[in-house]
Structure formats: C-alpha cells, structure tokens
Image (cartoon, rainbow, N blue to C red; front, side, top):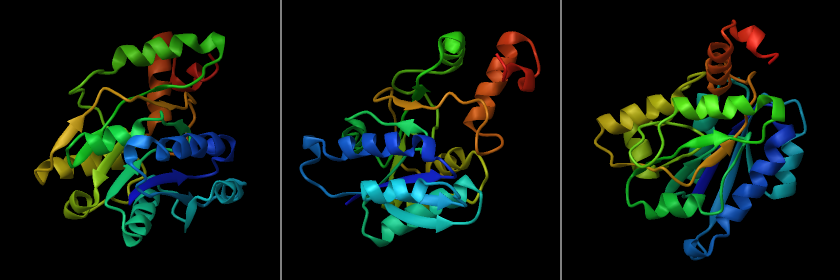
Length: 229
C-alpha cells in the first residue's frame, strides 16, 4: 500500500482541491491498482476540514499540537500501522499532478525530493512567481526539500527516526537524517507540485514566510509592508 500524508490546520478553503488532485494521482494506471490511502492530520482544526475529508473518503488523525512536524508524524504513523510501504507527503494548500505517485514509486530510490512552484496568482502579484523562480534550483539534482513534494520508503523513514515535532523545517530535518543514514535520494526536477502563494502561513518560519521575505527583498520594504503589494 502507498500512503499519502497531509497535515492541515484550518485548510478548508483549499483542502478539497488538494484531495481531488490526490484522487487522480492515486488512480494512475501505472500504479497497477496498488491501494493508496490518504490520511489527513487535522491539527487543531476548527473549520470544515473534517467534513471535506469525509466527502473524499480520506482518513483523519486528530492532533492538537499546532505543529506541522507533529502532524506529519501522526499521519505517517497511522499509515505505517495500516501497512504502507511508501509514504508520500504533500500539503493541504497544494495540488499534485496526475503522475506524482508514479514518479515517486518508479524513481528506484528510498527517498524522493521534488520541487514546487506557485499556484494561481492575481495579475497584480504575477511578479511574485518570477521572484520565487529566480531563487529556486530546478531540474534533476536540485537539492531542495519541500514537504509538499516528497516521499520516503517506510523502512528508510523508520530507520531515520521519522518526522520530528518541529514547527517548521521538519522536512529538511528528516532529509538530513536520511542522508546521514545512507538512504538513496532522487532529487527530481519533475513532476512539479503547485502550492499556495499566500504570504501569511500557518507556521512561523515556513514557506509563506519565505515568500514574504522574497517579496520584501523585491520591493525593498519590510515583510509586513510587502504583504500589501
């Protein structure tokens, strides 16, 4: 079985789109009918995220940590108990392409690290995409780590100790430990996961803060003023 883990803290506004994309990826014919299980870690959710999960038949793990690392770990643990051999990770504000799982499973490595790009932007914020893309590394061997586009074999995940309860950079921390353990890694340039371009995120120090810092640098103003751009 392939497991997909999704941490969520009040993501009802985008979770439906995320789960729809995961359903398409799970049905890819090159998976040859292997079961795919999606588990969403509902971390201190007070919105309609649980209802959306039920509509899609996604598993749910309640968490009260307000910590993305703890949420990812809880979802991973649940999937491992269900017998998952592979753990694919994305975010509730992201959309995966149809060949996302296929690429991970066919990479032939113990770890898959993919890239992300920004999703839909308002016309007046089109500059943010080029700003983000200039600062990224693309193509095979990129060396970037994004929790929205990664995967790991259960064996390697357990050997490395799993996701730590960190409020940000839990994905980077895990990959560093996987590297130290000697796990083989595919730094894949595609498929690309589309993720939210919001500048105010759920976790301090996370991807949204990175975008806000890029926006501030682009406009030469403090991050809080760049948010209005």
